[in-house]
Amino acid sequence: MTHQIPVNPHATPEAAALLRCLCQTAGTKIIAGQHTQTNPMEEVAYLKEVTGRTPKLCGFELLSYSPNLPDDTASEPCLTEIRENRGTVDTALRWAKETNGIVTLSFHWFSPIGGKDKSFYAENTDFDAKQILQPGTPERAAFFHDLDAIAVQLKRFQAENIPVLWRPFHESDGTWFWWGAKGPVVAKELYLLMYDYYTNRHALNNLLWVWNCRLPEGYPGDDFVDVVSVDIYLPEYRATDYAEDYRQLIAATSSHKVAALAEVGIAPDTAMLAESHIPWAYFMTWSKEFCIGETHNTKQQFRSVYQSDNVITMEAE
Image 1: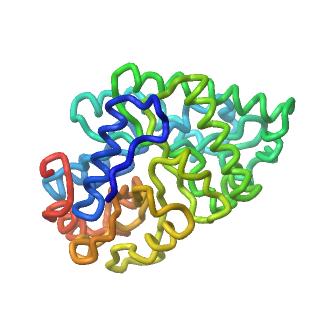
Image 2 (image 1 turned 60 degrees about the vertical axis):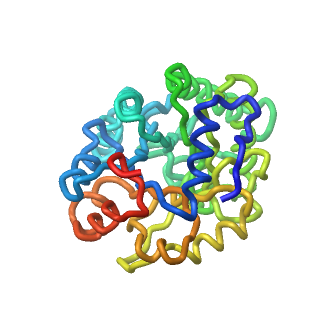
């Protein structure tokens, strides 16, 4: 993969080094990643038990840091998800410092105004993302209020010289989240607002910016994206290197950016990747039942992936 420099001209040395690592990896090996939504990091322990190895990259979730969380009348699944997620920044910081692993963050952002239950879902809120783009609206004020709150957490990583693969407004090629409900062009504009605010106002220079949409009209442009990525959940298991998905992603975004499987339900087939050299820099299997148990990935499949010579784990680089 062609060498890249971060789009933020003031990126920290650690962020620049991480991007170089991703570029050097893509097409030769792939970094193994695992999302872990709760503080015990049970998925990582499961993978270690099953495969003898641990992921080099871990995904953490910021949903419980949303300022507009629902009250106690929310559903039990919603309250449980919030409760289990509390303190994940502490967990991520500790894990990164102890292991020198790669941190990626996602944000299931409860709607800044109104909503009920899991209000990051568009069906649970009438929050209109398009109104954020209009100066002087309550939606715009709430948007920036929430950005300030999350910046506090992101700065904790910067203070420890920890780079972060930051993936906001994920899956904006769909309409199920409020930030994608008004279409990919609106989501793109929200991303650009955040990029400018975090880079120029908050000086968050430890972030690598990960775009997560494969509709061409939604692409923010090469000047604002470090990594292009896609989320893929196959309806049933099949061995794949996600080659066609790579081609679709690059066609919709940029051939000049390193690419990642930001979320997958089924881990890629590493034997196929060893032959095809599809240049995914990393993959991240989703949490809970997508990792633990054998509904989506069998133990043997995980062993095959994690013990492969072309997969980077904590134990094998």
